[in-house]
Length: 222
Image (tube, rainbow, N blue to C red; front, side):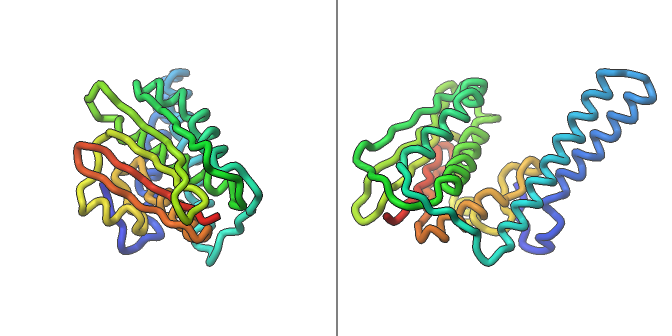
């Protein structure tokens, strides 16, 4: 894991720069040896890291704005969950993970930005699936739920039985550029998620225990 508290402008790019350097090395070897397999592998490495730079740059620009332009619409709060689970089911199956959703029939349509909430849920579900990458356990599960809490429009829950986090890590996950994924992560995802939830006047909470899993909760006002 890494935590960036100083020089936040450049360190998220360190892992990407290393990936680009590695891709260039493989490309050069492919040209030197006239090896098509090396050329293709090197190109995929370079292209993947260029995409990461593009996405990270856009995220940093959006995060740097005083506010994000939200597009509030009258929507079914269950819809973003359906979309995220549909998109992530194949990846979950590839990792031997049971991805399930439980949608409350009690929640009613209200005005919020469905694309922003889709992005928040996608980031949290992706993190939950990533938590199993080096986990040897046989039963791997991620649940995405909606419930109807008193005084709120909807409550989203993303629960996994993965590796979890200790108290020290849990306190840092919404801080600037903190990630538990080493060079594979930038830490911008949960920063943006919290910003989007804050702009909805909602709340986001996390409960976790090392070795037992993690629960993220998002509540949005109607």
